[in-house]
Image (tube, rainbow, N blue to C red; front, top):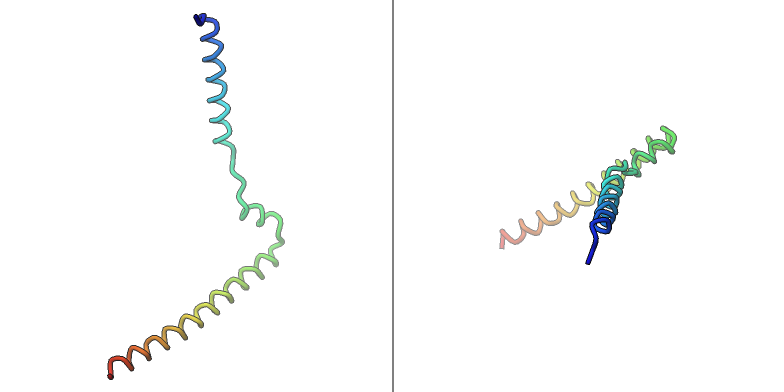
Length: 80
């Protein structure tokens, strides 16, 4: 049979485990973007944003070309 002291000890341990889990969930999460902002100099960040913009513009040009080709095939199909 389990004594009251053993029950209390077990409950205290379970409570301590739950509190530890709660503290672990409340820790501030490290965000990579925040770390990069701290590490990288502003001119590097500016350059990386410009490079990202160029990649997006390249993708836009590609999509425009594909859409134009698609539209021309649709026009050809309608004339048949």
